[in-house]
Image (tube, rainbow, N blue to C red; front, side, top):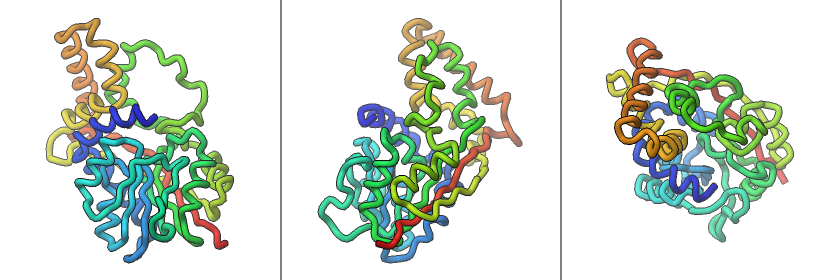
Length: 279
């Protein structure tokens, strides 16, 4: 997982501006749910290139990020110099790193669905928190989510089938926390209390710059896991011209799904909150 995110993270960093613009509703929802107060210590799990760290810093808190991707960590450190950013695995490592007291808040934007043992991971995170600390994160809901299919299906239709696909809906990955009961079981099993999930639907507006958003969505597809895998698998067989033609097919597919003149798929998410019980 660390090796994979170090490679994939380069594409995320290169497209940080697009991710921030399209996923702004989710970042805002997490910050609102966390109920930040100036002076608090805030841990961002799977901090990526620092979106929530920047928002937490602007709110007057002391932000600390943790991520397993070295490229993401480097980008977050550049973006939010005031934040401490750890290159570490939140599942198992000491998140206090021998430093100051525990965390008052834990936040995450799509950064907690990749744990091999989520109960142990959330227990480890909770141990780094003060009594009464609040957890707030956003994750993808189960069911049809255009963010995973719009444009990408053109590529996956040409790729060899994934032998492990569909074997375990709870396996680590973007949609691992899609079912609310599983999320509740994980968090209560890890010692968290007052677990709550609120459904949020929001458009991902790839036309944020006044364009139709096709090239923005295409850039994200090609820079992240599916696009990278498709190019590695298909371009050697198709050749440069064949690959370029396939990419044009993706463009055409995106144009067929414009909403009010732009690429605007609806994201279906959970905003999850919980509390670390008093000792």
